Every structure is written in C-alpha cells, then in structure tokens.
Amino acid sequence: MGSLVVAALSVPLSAWGIHRAYSWLVPDSSDVSLSRYLLLVGLAALAIRVSCSFFNSDRFQARARLLGCGPVALYPHKDPILGLDGFFGALRALNSHRLLEFYAGRFSSCAPTYYTIALGKWILMTNEAENIKTILSTKMADWPIDGPRLLATLPVLGPDSIFTSNGEPWHRARAMLKPSFVRDQVADLKCFDRHTRNMLAAIPGDDVAFDMQSLLLDMTMDSSTDFLLGYSTNLLSEASPEAQQFVRDFEYASRESAKKARLGTLLFHLPHPALRRAVRGLREYVRFYLKKAIAEAEKGAGARERSYVFLDELLKANPPEDYTIDQILSILIAGRDTTATAMTAAFYFLARDPAAVAKLRDEILGVGDANPTWEQLKQLKYLNNVIKEALRLFSPVATNSRTANKETILPRGGGKDGKQPILVPKGMSVRWSLHALHRSKDVFGPDADEFRPERWDSDLRVSWEYVPFSGGPRICLGQQFALTQIAYTLFQFFRTFRSLEARDDGPLLARTNLTISFPFGCLVSVKRA
Ligand code: HEM
Figure 1 (cartoon, helix red, strand yellow):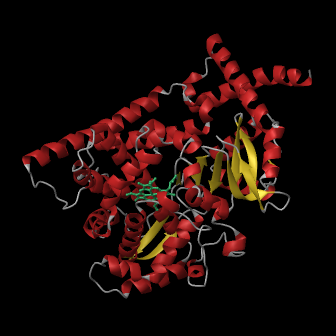
Figure 2 (tube, helix red, strand yellow; figure 1 turned 180 degrees about the vertical axis):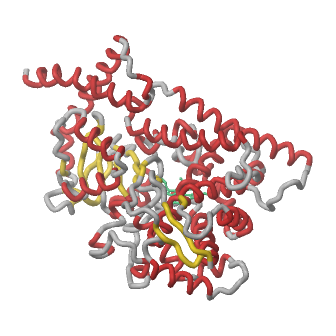
Figure 3 (spheres, helix red, strand yellow; figure 1 turned 30 degrees about the vertical axis):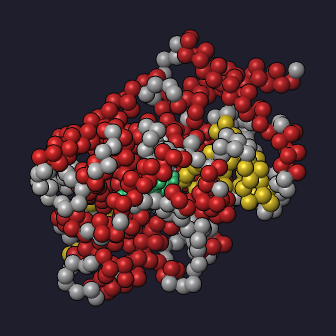
C-alpha cells in the first residue's frame, strides 16, 4: 500500500521533472500538449519500475556475497526514484561551469565508488584507477561503449564510426585508421608550421588583451581539416562562408548531442530538429571534399599542397561514402577541441607563472634558430613536463563512461573500506572523471591542484592514475599527433614572445560537453621578443 502511494505521488512529479529536463534540451518545447504529458507520465512510470527493481533484488545481493563482493555505497538522494535532486544539482553545476568540481566533490563526500540515480537510471561512479584499468583493458570485452558515452556521439557519427562501434566493427575501423597515425605522418611538422604561423600572426600588438582559446580553436580546426580533407577551413586567414557554417554546425552538434546524452536513454529519442539540421550540414561539407578527392584521384591530379592527406589514404580501401564520413568526423571530434583545450590550459597556467615561462624559454632558445624537428621537440624535457601537467589538471576528455554487457566484477569499491571487489549487473553504466582522478592528493601530493611541471622530474610513477589519452586497446589514436602539435605551438609561441601575462583573474572554469572547453576563454597579452 505504502509503495502504491509513493508511486502515485512520484509519477506526476517525475513526469513534470522529465518535462523540465526536455525544455532545457529544446528551449522551444515549453508548450506541453496532453499527449506529450501522457507520454512523459508513461516514461516516468517506466523509470520508476526500472529503478525500483534493481537494488531490491535480494538474489543479486546474495550472489554478490557468494562471489566475495562487498556492498557499494549509495548516494544519499533526496529523490530516491528519479534522482531529480542529483539531476538539478548537476544542472546547476553545469550551468555555472563547475560540473567537474561537482563530480570531484561527490567522490570526496560519498565514496570513491558509489551508485547514483540519473533520471531514474542507476549509474555507478568510480574514481579508482584499478576499476578504470579493468574496464578499459583487463576486461574490456565486458565493457563496450554504450549508455551515456554512446549517446553523446551517436547523433553525429552514427553507429559505425571508430568512436561509437564495438567488437568487430570497431576492430575494422581502428585497423583502417591506425596506419594514418604512423610516425612519419605525425612528424610532418609542415602542416602544423603553416597553421601555427597563421595563429601567431593573428595575435595583436604588445600588451593588448586577446583570447588565446579562440585562436587555438581556429588553429586546430584549420590544421585538422587540412590534415583530414586536404583543404583547410582557413579560419585564421580567409574562411569561406561554407567553412564558417561548417564550424558553426560542428560546434552546435557537439554541444547539443552532449546535452541530449545527459538526459539519458529515456529522453534521447525525443526529436531535436535543429541538431538534425546541423548534423546534415556537417556531413554534406565532408561529402563535398570526399567527392572532390575521388574526382582528383581519378584524374590522377597532383593538385594537393600537402604530400599526405588522410582522406586520400582512407579512400585507398574503397570504403562506402557514409562510412568514410563517419570516420572523418570521428577524428575531427576526437582531435580538434581536445588539442585546443590542452593548449589553452597550458597557456592559462603559464600566463600566471613567469618563472615557468623563463625556464621554458631558456630550453627553447637553446635549440637554435632553425625550426625544430620532431626528435628535438621530444627531447625538450621541461616543455614536455608543461604539457603533461596541463593535461593532468585539465584533461580535455574529463569524464567518460562504459556499460557492462554482462554481469561482471570490478576490483574496488565494495565493503566499508571500499577495498573489496564489487558485482556489477548487466546493463549498468559506469562513469569516471579524469579530472578527479588526476587531482588525487594520494598520488600527486598535497599540491595536486597546483600547476607544477617540476613534479614530473621527480620519481613520480603513475600508470592508470594518469590517463589523459585513456588506455588499453582503445587508447587515443591521435596521442602523438596531439602532443606534437601542442609542443610545436608552445615552442614557436615562446620563441616569438618573451612574456605572457594573464588578463583576467578568475579561476579556469570548464564547460563540460563531450570534451571540456573554457566558457570565458583565456584572456592574455604578450610582449614580443
Ligand atoms: C590533447 C588531445 C587529445 C586528448 C586528451 C585525447 C584523448 C582521448 C581519449 C581519452 C580517448 C578515449 C575515448 C574513449 O575511449 O571513450 C581518445 C580516443 C580517440 N582519439 Fe584522442 N585525444 C586527443 C587528441 C586526438 C587527436 C589529435 C586525434 C586525431 C587526430 C585523436 C583521435 C582519437 C581517436 C580516433 C580515438 C578513438 C580510439 C578508439 O576508440 O579506438 N585524438 N582520445
């Protein structure tokens, strides 16, 4: 009887909550027709059924005990059915650009591994390196990309891309793309050089404030499209209206698909016409260059400025048109904002640390006047420490998730001390935060929140405690590409400018989508050498 009363009260309340969540996703959806309200009531009832069934199962708890697994902490929700308190807390944090801190705070206040409810769906949160290693490597087959991580990329990439597929289709996509990331291509610094110079040329005169992030985003879009399509968007020089529209569509689609994913499976399938239009625009832009590349290949035209174009290499395998577009957009999504974010974080911290800039410049000027080679960049220890440290403090892929495709065991999080293994039911999504993981005081010391590149000089031994490029078989394919571009950009920047000063005094707040970015940019000024 009691549970009937709870359900009777919860269903309309939850339907209202879901409606508010949908209005947040699609702002012009505030008129609720009776039929839509009834649909929401149905969804809410379903959510309640799902959420009630899981933890009440004595059989599951008994099985866990039998397998030597301990109980997992539960987040103390005020709304124990849909977890709307958590949803709106996260929404507030998201809107004030403090979602990363919100997740980190919950790990400290609740437990390093705990269950929470996200709009009626139970999710496991973990901040333990051993669990992350198990999910991404040791038991990768149990943990495909599904749930929130899949939903965040599916609207743009479809199910066959390297970023969204699992099993055999993923193996095929990875095998096709991997050869394009061999060292010879990654070490081709000419492409980076052209776009770095355009970026440096766009910097205003000495002591004039400008936003470093927006220049870096333009630069990484220009260099990525150059590398992938053989034609740059040229945002830093002379972008065509089509290129500008492409970038607007790209940014809108990345933002909106991440937003949609946050609402979970329940609301994912509700229509979002503007997102669909943006995705169509994106795909048509890539299709134009794909057809152009096919035509040029047929003519045998040596018209390319660049000796190596990713698209040309992909076409050698003669893949279907839409499949190729999926893969190109995957690389663009994977590589553009991530690299710009890592560089922006490095510039943010360096702008507040003149001693680090002096040390970095000493090292860079020691290389001489010629452009550096790939090997020289790799040998610059302090430069590489700066990059590692920026990636630690603001990992561009700050949160990630996987979903169990069968009942499986994770090594940590059970029992009072959280050290026992835990039994995870089939279908459970687990989410982790690199932001929280990389700031562990146990691993990085009491000054873990501070920028101190020197920490990498010491005997700091990290493995799964530091994974900005992820790990295991699905480790980032573009790691060397990104590190090279970041190193080259920092090198040329600090050769050109003798000082970098911060022009705002706020903390670095992060906007959290598929990857993070900085909503207030990174205001700095420079002095030429
Ligand atoms: C600082 C820059 C970058 C960071 C921090 C980064 C980080 C990551 C992470 C964490 C993943 C794993 C995602 C997951 O498994 O859910 C990933 C995957 C991937 N990254 Fe990167 N990435 C960066 C730059 C790049 C660049 C420049 C490219 C390509 C040009 C690239 C291509 C890829 C691809 C293709 C995957 C999917 C690999 C697979 O699933 O097999 N990334 N990256």
